[in-house]
Length: 345
Image (cartoon, rainbow, N blue to C red):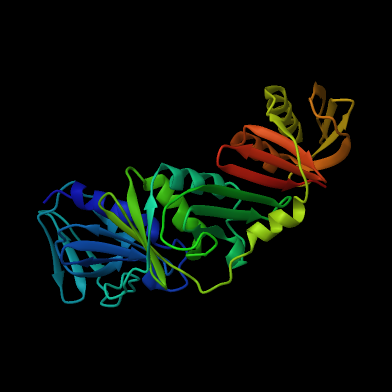
C-alpha cells in the first residue's frame, strides 16, 4: 500500500497533539474503525478515515517512520507491535491500548452558534489582544457573550500595555433583550485553528463542558473550563464615561510608527514610543542604544497630551482599525463592528 494517503490523514490531526506532553498519552494518535483521533488534553481532533489497524501509537514517531517509505507491502498489528513491512526492510512501533478522548457522544448540545464570516472576523480581531501564555484562564482566550439580538466577543492582553478588544454583530435568538443566553471563554488555541481551518459556514455546538465544530472533514472540540468570565462591558463603561471623538486613521501615523518600531528593534525590552500632541501636531520619538527616530505629523484632533506607548502592540493595533481617538490616557480604535482600547504609559 502507498503511504501518502495515511501520512496526509495523520498530518491533518497532528496539530492536536502536544510537543511536550504532561503525559505521553497526549502525543498519541488513536486509530479506530472509520476515524483517527488526537487529543492534547484540552482539545481534540477527529478525522474520518479507514485505518489499517486499531490502536494508539506515538504520532510523531509513526509519521517519521511512514515518511521513510513511499510504499509498504503491509501494515499490521502483531500483539502490542505495529509492523511496517517491505521486501527488504521492516519497522516496528509499540501499540498502546489507552487513549484519552474528549468526544462524548452522549453529551447533548445546549446552544448552537452559527459560524459565519462575522464570527470568524470577530475571532480574528480579538485574537490580536490575547496573551498566548497567560495563566489566567479568563484572559487566555476569547469570551463569547450572547444576547437574543447581539453576539459579543471580548479579549484582553495585559502584556506590554493592556489592550482590550470588543467585536459585536446582530443575531436572532429567542429571549428577552437583556437576557444573557450564553457566556463562555473559548481557549486561544481553539480559536486560532477555527480561523485557520474554516472554509464555509458551519455551527459551533456548545454543551456544558465542551464546544465542538465540524471543519470540512475534521471534527474539532475543546473542553470548556468552569470559570467566571471577565465583565468586559463594565470595564468599558468604567473607562469611557463620556463622549469621545475619532478621526480616520492617518496613513502618515501608520508609517511613522513602523519607522519607530524599526529604530527600536535593537532593544529586547522597553520598546516605547514617546508621543506629544500640541496644536494638532503630533511629535513622535523613539530611541535605542544605536538608533533613533523623530517625526512630526498633523493630527486633526483638538486635544493635547504627552505619553509613551508600547511600540509593537500599538503597531499591531493600527493594523486592525480604521478610526482612532484619544480619551483620558487611552487610545481608542474602531473598525465597523470592532472596538479596541489601549492603555498608554
